[in-house]
Length: 539
Image 1: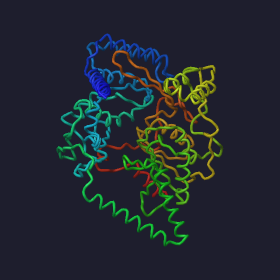
Image 2 (image 1 turned 90 degrees about the vertical axis):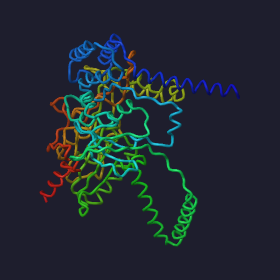
Image 3 (image 1 turned 30 degrees about the vertical axis):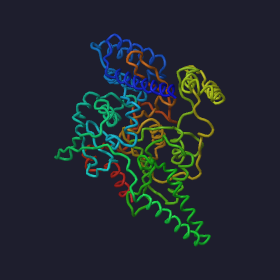
Image 4 (image 1 turned 90 degrees about the horizontal axis):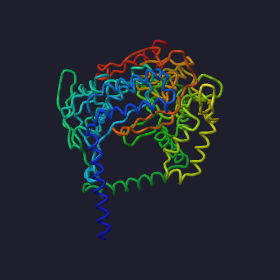
């Protein structure tokens, strides 16, 4: 028993030392020569491994930018400061999925245990940014006095404007697109503040709403303890269930069937519209801008990183067709993408074409014959490759068979038979598509395919993703020796089933309308309002 506690103590201490060592590295300044070596390593890796790295700028230009940055390093820097400056250079190459990581502070197991039954103040709030403004978008705390859409000037004295000036242009979209970056500062500012102030039981937020400036204290919230009436409430619940069962027993066979169908429908809605118990929101939503008119519907898709898409979209469009919808508004604003196959199922219900097809092109460029196989090997790890040997062998073989050499490089066959869809009950009414700078990756693949068909009217902002595709799909990374930062990059140049001559730009709306910060403050959706006005004028 003594040996057990000794071993436990050693494990605990080593864990604490490991966390301390990790956090100490964040605050440690790295010598100039070592940082320059990391830049050289970045240049060598990106030029050699990143597929189509020279899609927007020549390899010579990319090398010169990294060399110029290396020459500007005259003083030692902390890892996160180095990450910020290196990110600005890497993002200028036009590959939005290529990301330089930064470090977030770790906490010890003891601290985790202490706060296990609680939520920190910043985890209770959702912040969003628009240009150089930060605002409160969602309040999950118990404090109902927090004003949504109020501008946040600072947290614990750390001014957002100072952060914005420091980090401006550290992330960009694809190609020469500028619309994505203005939305990127909300979450990154929170990480920055968390690293600066550490774990806190309360934070002081300086807000501004119109001409009023005020401070709010947001406190850590703990899980509520069960009160004395819990047992009584439990008994009441049991009694209520019993009463419901008795009522159910008295129903006719037809009534029972209808009740069962209603319950099944509610379950399907929750499942296929992807209800999140964490955010208490649906990730797919149908809404009616005019409550008295069911023929105009907004279908909002917040992400393509969801399951059940194969069954979800038939379920959704069955409802749309039953409602006899004449004007469908597809809202993919702030949809950062996800699985292209998810977007492909949605596309199959919106396309005007009458043949089997996929939203993406058949084959896409990769950097080598064995690149994807090596990536799968690293992803599975030693244990994964051993335990999942049949799956590993299948994935390796598939990646090699599907990768073919052509005159201008290697190409990977992405699509299979199951990706070529032709839905018998497609939507055939008027189609509007709402986009903004955060419409990215798979969302841009979908938007390009729809815009090419000419049926949809696009309203809003240019997408953050390139019309002609983006380097993503499968990801790999490499670690910088001295700063210990990682750089993630895509391995497949994903393309939509269309292309155009205009290079490095997103899906440009037919009706460009920018949301201003005043619109946010006043909760005005000028983009959606334009569509509703256009529908009204056409009647």
